[in-house]
Each structure stands twice: as structure tokens, then as C-alpha cells.
Image (cartoon, rainbow, N blue to C red; front, side):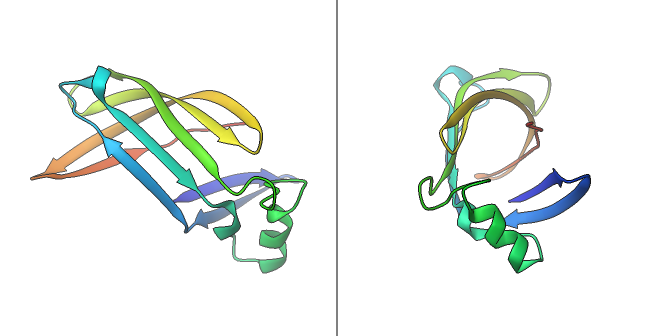
Length: 121
């Protein structure tokens, strides 16, 4: 999982390597579909270990108290062929927000590939 964060006027690229997702998605049964995921912010890597350690601390993710970032779908809408928008509840630390995530779906046999991105402040 990749992310970008602006900090002190600088954009930092990073990854979260410890994450998992449960997908039960049928484009013909959107009301019954769901996507749930969680990520361990302690696995954040930005290329600078000191910065990573700082992100683990109380000022940012406070991983000792909040070991997971979670994302859970609430609803989906079709926006055309293989294009969707999902409304999700995102929780980082003790803050929950509803986010809208546009995404595309490609399917090869039984394998589904989802691609989407979103911005939060």
C-alpha cells in the first residue's frame, strides 16, 4: 500500500507493508458487497528510519495505543463499466471519517484487481 504525506511543506512518499483486506464484491450485487481492510502503521516506511519512528509516536499514529488503521465500506455505486465509487468509514487513531473512494475493477477469471486512491486532510 502506498501513500504520500505533506509535512512541513515537503511531500513524502511511503509504504505500509503490513496490511490485510477482506473483499466480498459483486458488481451486480453492490448492496450486498463489502470491502474491509486494516493496516499496521508500525510498518510505515518512508526511506528515513528516524522519520518512520517519529510517525509511530504520539504526534502522528501513536501505534502503542492505536495499532491499526481501518477502512470499511458502507455503500457502492456504479459509475460506468468497471468504474465505481465506494463510501467508506476510515479510522485513524480515534478519529473516524467518511471518505468517498472512486475505484476501477478489472477481472481475469476469478481474480479481481481494484485500483483507487483518495485524499484526506
